Amino acid sequence: MEGRKPFQIVVAEPYATEAMACLEKVGHVTILENSAPDTLIPALRDADALLVRARTHVTARIIDAAPHLKVIGRASPTVDHIDLRATKKRAIRVVYAPHAAVLSSAEFTLGLILAAHRRIPFLDRQLREGNFEAIRHPAGHEISRQTIGLLGFDAVAEKLGCIISNAFGSRIIHHDPFGGKPTSFEADAVSLDDLLSNTDILSIHLRMSEETRGFMNADRIRRMKTSAVLINTSRGAIVDTKALAEALKKRFIAGAALDVFENEPLSVNHPLCQEPNCILTPHVAGATLDASARRFNVAEDVVRVLKGESPKYPFSRD
Image 1 (tube, rainbow, N blue to C red):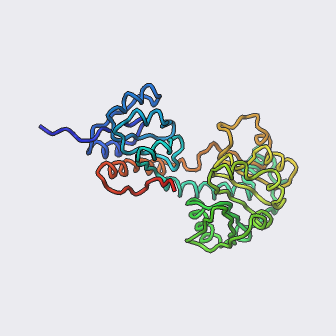
Image 2: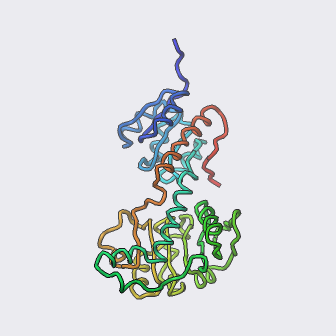
Image 3: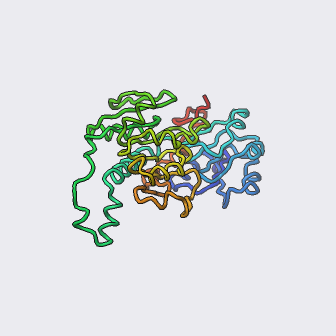
């Protein structure tokens, strides 16, 4: 008779079949019907590993209820909703999927850039309303003739910049208060003032922190060109959306495209919803089938930790 598998693994949210098979090779897997604390806490009494996705809040209380816990895996590019102080105190490893949605997010950001810069949704609406010849006149410029500004620098900015550089040859400038810089394409590092005043298309890639909350406020938006377009697929709270709506209404900037917001879902009564030069999408930049599949590779890192091996994508607290 086969011996007892050594590890107790709790999966609090649905995972892909391949990921489950990977976990079942090394331990007994318990799948929870929901991730509410009343369900999660009893299940973790003997657990060596916990796997979550986006909904589960792994609080200090939950961690304290799992005396044998060695690793927490989150099938997400972030570790939001995990109490990192509590994991550090217990020396529990946290692994995640930081690169799972990078390509999907970069491609989607490029799509928003093209749609906003060339006013594609506006032209679509006009045609459907019976305006055809009236809107067939030259407008805008080719992307290759525009200066692309990257505010902040992360893996998505790296991939986006590489795509734009190779496909269009645009001039790219960047500013990151945390010191990030490109490695796969040429770009000029500039001050924040120069970035805002010289950029034709500004794509935001700042990390979320108290310093960056509301970073793009009314004053900084006003410092942009009146012909500029603002794109945000990073973190919603970085942009003051009411200030942005006012700037669009008063034509301080030409357009915007947002996939993320301070509060989600975005209210249909939000002033941005009234601005025709603003494209709004429901936080789906990284939501492709390919990215979704890659998120579940975190199960492989959980197994590595359980075996005493080094994970590929550990979350660093430094």
